[in-house]
Image 1 (cartoon, helix red, strand yellow):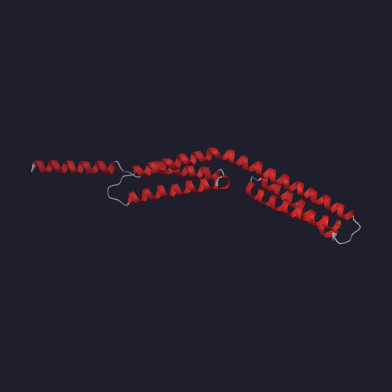
Image 2 (image 1 turned 180 degrees about the vertical axis):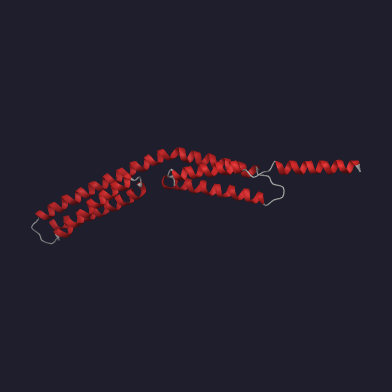
Length: 192
């Protein structure tokens, strides 16, 4: 009887040790979520969308691993802890690299804006030359209004750059450049 009690006591001790050592990794979960939230708040989805998506997916996988262990009688959160640690590290690395990616996006937006500005100036010059032409095939008033629209679009691009929406600014600048070049071509036809 004494031996049975000893084994029973030893079994309870082992069971207690196993369950006591496997508590949900709340600190690790909070640290990983905080790191991901911080990276997203600083613009990870804007400046590094592929990495942002990967980090969010890794956080979801780690959270699912915690939930999977929660459902077990004998819980072992070691793998979940490793996953959460990797998510935190990846999110911190992503966040630290955002300044360079943001600066790169800004440079591209400024270059696209300058290219669009040059195309707008070219359209204005072509329009001025077309107005001097004796051929009356062009609707100068329409072209003048279109050039004003181009100037308004340049102002909009400048606002986008100021608000750090570089991707949208690049897209709009490229579209504006194309439109201005088309207008230059149209105005050039009227001189010929």
